[in-house]
Length: 215
Figure 1: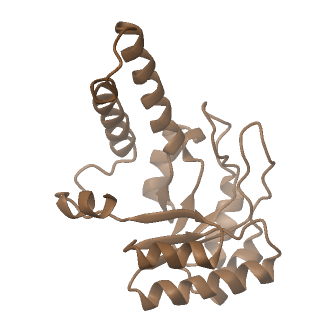
Figure 2 (figure 1 turned 90 degrees about the vertical axis):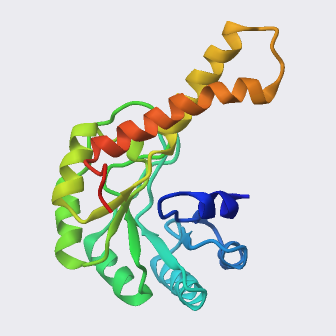
């Protein structure tokens, strides 16, 4: 279903597996036609993370897909604490795995519903000084919009994940739709009312990154 929607889109679409936890997960995604996979070994010892990520990179390349890896654990709001990315380890990870994108931990958190204090720019600069690979921010919903815009134009951060931001827009719209007509039960009718708010939320993020109209 996802592949069909992607093929019908008027812009290029990446079918991406996020946070694949095993070689088997990533292989299954590639076999299903995904064009990008992320292997998340950030909670593993460094050498094990490197070895498994490199194996996924090889699978992805053989399938004509791209691979993202993660070095330094990105924690969760009200959950597991982060373990910030060590710049020297990031350099080794990038060189030995061959990843095409590298997710890093620099003060970002998953599932953050409100703006945090912003990213650790000194740690980001140290990582950028030792690597050349495009960087990824998971938990981007908690990064202040002004900082996201600044980093989009001045850093090597090439992807910012904002799933929580969009899920919040979806939840708000869904609650409003149910409240307007408590007797309504048709799921298609109800869910249709979430489409426009989520679309607008996504547009706002894209425009806020200065990415509108850019290839």
